[in-house]
Length: 105
Image 1: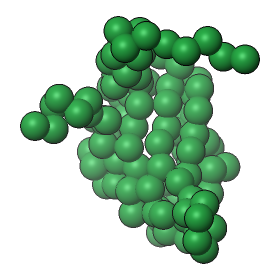
Image 2 (image 1 turned 180 degrees about the horizontal axis):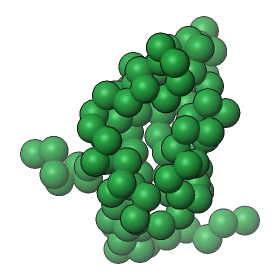
Image 3 (image 1 turned 180 degrees about the vertical axis):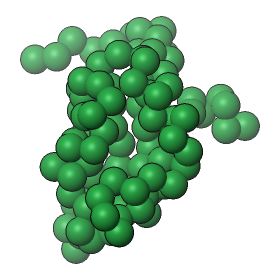
Image 4 (image 1 turned 120 degrees about the vertical axis):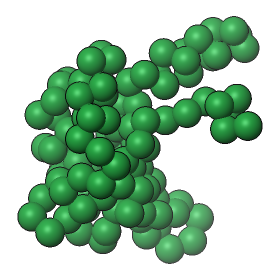
């Protein structure tokens, strides 16, 4: 069983992940976890890749996802590529560095 994190531990974890995590949008039906891993794995070791799926209704992809690197450096390199990235021939997605809720205000 996982031990629950305190609010401060959670805040620190999110702050660390903010510099290692990408938010991906405009994921077409042909984009899957393997395609994302193949492209973004070229820049550094990945800790997690998620394509978000509607669990309650249709089980369809929601056209967004996340990539989490193990280290901070690869994220900086990917961000330099720009917002729109062609991850496979004819497959362009939008990606941004994640933000904390406080940064959205």
